Length: 54
Figure 1: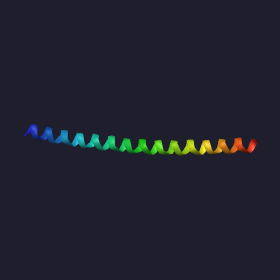
Figure 2 (figure 1 turned 60 degrees about the vertical axis):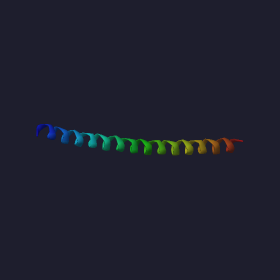
Figure 3 (figure 1 turned 30 degrees about the horizontal axis):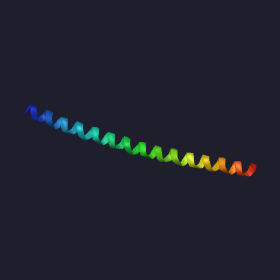
């Protein structure tokens, strides 16, 4: 009985860890996408500024 309870708790813990890791990966992807957009906008701004100086 005690072993079964431990196994059930272990399965629950593993599920929680998996959910946590998956959520962190999703947030990391969102952050990466936002950083990419910011870099593209910065590059567009610099390109426009350089073109306007010429």
